[in-house]
Length: 422
Ligand code: UD1
Image 1 (spheres, helix red, strand yellow):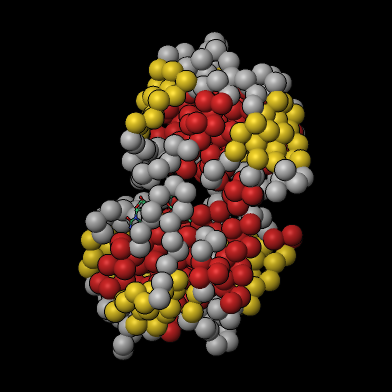
Image 2 (cartoon, helix red, strand yellow):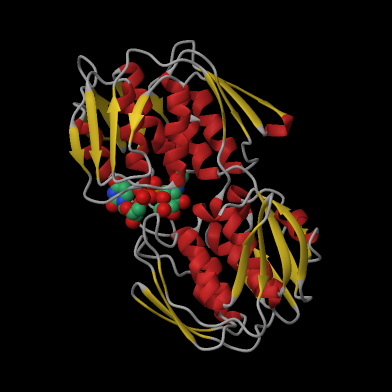
């Protein structure tokens, strides 16, 4: 298993290109099941999660081909589709559950393994099940698999979700594109990845309104056609690299960055003393004079502060002046990076869904362990600003969500390298 070795060595300066969004691509890919004609995605990120989704789609009978080293993905679901999403693939990645809605819409039945828990929480499927049941699906759980059937096809309906789940919104919207009649989803999630999914579905001929608001209306159509769609910028990768000069000093331009993708995050950076300016090609980030100031952060569904940037923000606040409180409202167990940061000298107390961070002058390098995708990159960020060497082990998590992380940071002057086999 590879590790990443980081040596703290002062300010970072340069330009970092931001890839297409992993989480958008993971819902755009299953959308191919809705049409017999090919769907091509451009600006796709090159990540192990995308390879897992490719394997899953191939196991369902979808032909998948990649060009430009994976940046362009073409999928074709013209032949017979197999309705069973096997545990062996689904267990690797929860986003596999995003084939449920499209399979049900295309075939009238689907058998999809329950994903199981993951390090950051139990992550149940009840909101997905209720949403698809509202469209007329009957769903039973047998042998660890969800068996979903819609006799006579899905039918449009009005449904309000108990919580604005991102994945359940995506499953509902995809399923409703081919349902008979009109569907209305209330308390829908508003994330940019959902807006991107709807843009793609519209290119495929779907009739949808209200994406990016809490009410999405879908007028079912008989069939969808092929399309070519560029994947939206990855706002989480963007926020992560924006934090690099915030933590280390210097000035970094993130190509493809947009403030509207991260407004709550940008407000917190401003309050912490980090300047973010729009340029012709993206966003330029620099630390204003002096030490970073403590800020309180609450993670919430979009447009709130993203849970997927909480660990990285904590890395910044470890060396801020004053005490910050981070409240995690999306996942019940998402502070596993705190004890690792404490190994580097951070002062953090975790109590339930709150972490209190007392800023220290400097972190010190240490061997640490990545527990999940975003935690792993927070440890790299902390290592970049720490005195001495930090060895982050278990970086396979990192490869799920960040392409060429070492290269991108090295281009800005960071001392970072991958060490094989630790
Ligand atoms: C997506 C993102 C993930 C991000 C999360 C929240 C993808 C592939 N992943 O995950 O990176 O951290 O949004 O922004 O897009 N829940 C239930 N029952 C359900 C569904 C969800 O209780 O049926 C709970 C979850 O356990 C969690 C919360 O709702 O506590 C949010 O989950 P959800 O919005 O569904 O996240 P995902 O779509 O899984």
